[in-house]
Image 1 (spheres, rainbow, N blue to C red):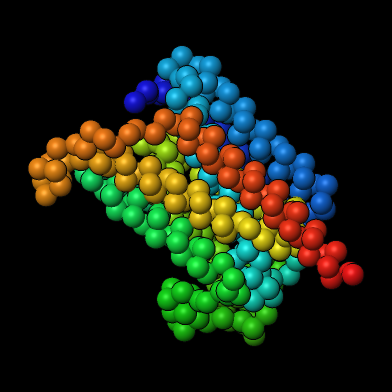
Image 2: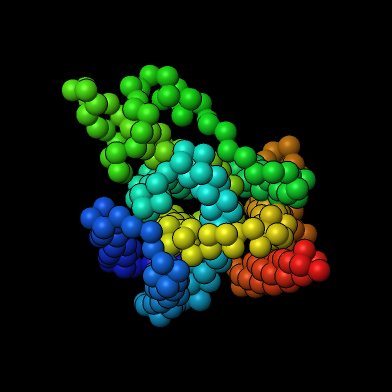
Length: 330
């Protein structure tokens, strides 16, 4: 596995964390509902930034085609899975009746929480993979299971249920009944109380962490480099807030998204199982020897597969939505 220069990794992390903090500062000072144009410009900026980052990774000494391809495959996968997160975000905002002008800050803080938690998850995952290569069997089986579940559950109505943490917080925290802007604490009758915003922040953050249970194994199926795993997640999450406002009601038009994601996750799951077989060390399988017939899937094949599936899914979804709209107006 190629190793990227340390100066590049450190410089990248400092720059991206600085960008995130600056973004949070801007949102905190000027809470508002962004227009479609503003959201489109920001989404375009973050997408262009991710593409530029991948190109730089391709050109720098110590970089090259392999790490750049791994980044693009990971970023596209994480970004597409993040779109699925948006369905739940819309439901959470509606359930907790978050004021429209405060939704940007809610998303930003929730994403920062999720980013910290994912960072911990990535470090743990990398440590486990380094010591126990057979964990790819578990990752692969989990992704295949998730893919099947996505297909089977795709016609069910999307619902949000408070997880155990949120239910516990409701019981132990002294909460007000109303919001006070984007504040998490406010004074009511001389008493300092939490606002419902604290619950919303944790609902967004903890929900996104649950989505990471399939997205992190998926990207580890494309690269074992923790830096590439983290930056792919970071770039996907950075554009998520603006994508939320840009897509809005258009999410309902992606009728085949779950099928596309299922195919991507299933494909990566199969790749992980094949890789585990190719490097098998489990003593009760083939006497602890690798399976010579199990092929290694090149990263460029994974990249082409992911892009093709998502492109077909998007086009098919839009065509189907247009067909349904014409039928409704007929």
